[in-house]
Image 1: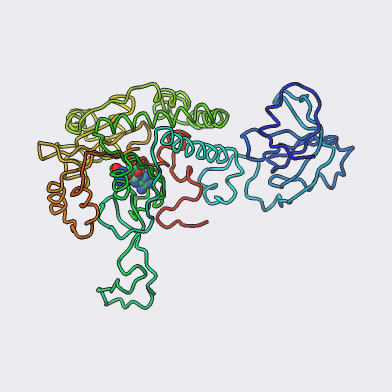
Image 2: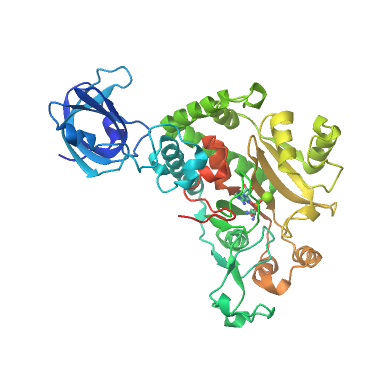
Length: 480
Ligand code: 4AD
Ligand code: MG
């Protein structure tokens, strides 16, 4: 008899009694003198199948060995359940234990564990309802991203992970070397990188953008979807040292087309999850609701998870300039009463997440796109506006998350680009290849970067970014 996955089994219509075989891990076992009820899950769905094992068919000592966490194979008859909690159950005829799980040692007890505790058990947390739901959604969300770009004729570009370009300025970099660090004298501050593996100083990439631009200026429409690395010591619930980023880059596209693409893209991905991850989202919606009920009223989110996802899909993102944002913030209550940690004084101030969240959650109550930031707080490659003060940047801010997307129209004018680079102390010789695209057949082009885990947080309602990536890397943490 072939094994059937629980997802498929539960979709069987009609109540004809069927013989079947399932495999999975025991979530819980309870019972009476005469019968044991086992909740079995195989990861194919959030739902368990109930296994009914009557003592008269099985040895009592054998049944005792089936504990939470053990892997078993069950053969039996699929029948309409006698209980009210589930429609179907399996009347077991044969059970084999594939892998026992010592009940005293197994860290996942059939009770609710804290997310912090489960982070330390990242090797086992896939077996919980919450994390199996999160990681199934992570799969669907990645798939949606590839589908969105594929359907629109984009080509994926696999940009390098190891890079010698340390000029992008998106963040502190992790150095990559195979020099013997223990043999480098502490006094020698002049390391000869000619002897290093690549013959030059190299690091892990902070972004695939610069290479994606090269590809876009030939292929027209491209995107990257890969890991990026930032060595900042930011220990927040929204920062990872290793995170995944999606970076589309489009030739002959201006800032408005770029914003439209980003808005369509985000709505598409969220809709995709709403249509394809219904059971998992229902579970996470309820989970979040249970969690929020414990909070004080003013700390609760105004909407449930699924309601919030639908709301974002249906709403038109608010578009304002940085200067407008500064005016709004300057005259806002928390700024006047100095409730913000960073009080906004005027043009040139960088927006902190408290300001971003004020704009999204209090002022506009929907996603906001902020454009035309001061050149001083943005990267060298962004197209300079005629005012010579601001650049054609755009950040998309989401409720509960803050910045989810950062992008811009790129500077296509060679002289202006060189000028910005020297203002920012970036050596032209390091980026000669980037500059050549402005020398030969330059054209307007735009792109953006979406933080995949930030979108995952929004879609799943998980409040810590460490809980939406299987094995998080953060300062002082690289286990598993
Ligand atoms: O705003 P960032 O730094 O933009 C870039 O890297 C550009 N090269 C993108 C482009 O135009 N192609 O990063 C883009 C997004 C942010 O908006 C945020 O969602 C996410 O990446 N991000 C992080 N996510 C998790 N942990 C971190 N440490 C992150 N830093 C940025
Ligand atoms: Mg940014």
